[in-house]
Each structure stands twice: as C-alpha cells, then as structure tokens.
Length: 217
Image (cartoon, rainbow, N blue to C red):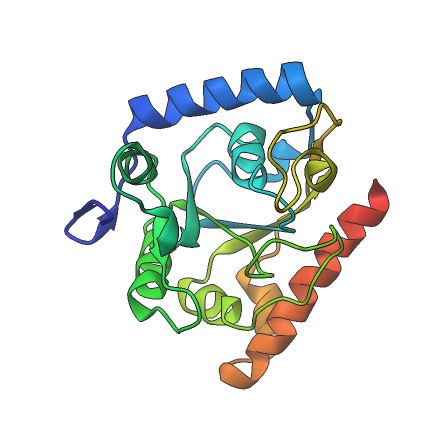
C-alpha cells in the first residue's frame, strides 16, 4: 500500500530523482524527446498537470518534462504488485486508485496534497487510448479542481502511442514531444459554474485546452 505520514503524500527524493534521470536518458537517446513550455508550470503552490493518455510512457514523459518538483501520479491500484513494483510506486509517491468505483480515499489524498502545494498529474480520460486519439474526460476531475482550488496545467504528449501503444511488447524509436500549456487558474473554472453540475463543463474545458496544444503541434 501507499506510504503515508499523517496522510501526507511523500516521495523519496533519491528514488524519484534517480528514476527521472534514467527515464530522461532513455527518452533522449531512444525517442529524441522534445519538451516545450515547462516554464509555464508554477514552481510554488498546488499544481495539477492534465494530459492525454495513450501509452505507459506518458507518466515518465511528464516526469522528465518537469523536474523542478516531484510529480505525483494517480494510477490504478492493480499496478501495486508485490516486490519491486510496489516499492517503486510508493517510493516515487504515486496515488493508487481503485478502478470502476469512486475512490474517495484517493480523491481526498489528491485534494489535500494540492492544498499543501504539491504537484499532481492526472489523465482526465481515465485510461489509455486504444487508437491514440483523444477521448472524453471523466467528470470526477472537476471535484478535485473545485475543492483544491489549484492551478491546472494542460499538456499534450505526441508520439507516445506510436512508440509504445497498448499490447506492444517493445518501445519503438519514434520521436516523442510534450507541450505544456499556460496555467488555468481557479477563477477560470469558477466562471464555468460550481458544484457537481459544473464538473462536466470543467472536464470538457480541459480537453479543449489539450486539443489546442495538439493542434499547435
């Protein structure tokens, strides 16, 4: 299970930094990764990075794209297997989420972490795309944004599907890039409404921002 200290999300900086160094080296040498707009991410305060999701490579790409602070990822709990996998997921400060049900514990931990000024990464689509195209976002992301009042950074990852799609056994040497957009402030989302009825509007707005970054490519 996730390591917690007074229910606080913690990353072991030695594990996290060494992991991002290894991922960066691999993505540079094998996929010639390009990073755009990382300076758009605030260096202080709670930040939620939201991105398209087409590959298992996406979390490492985001972690390599922004390295000034640890990025905590929400990931399905089935990835916490015994042994090295569970140890590593805990070490880098990931949040396990139960699939196909509202995981209140995970949501509360994400909200609290953002309120404490941490960086959380969430894939609004909920799961990897089967064909590399953008999917609809899950409205649950709206609850976290409203309650945490964090800045939201949209991002678009290009090339990860071609490099390592679902059911692929090997990572192909396909070029990859990530583009971070401008921050979306809490007031931006408040203007769309409040409460559960507004969460779908939050989700749609986020996907529109991601689409704009895709079209910039």
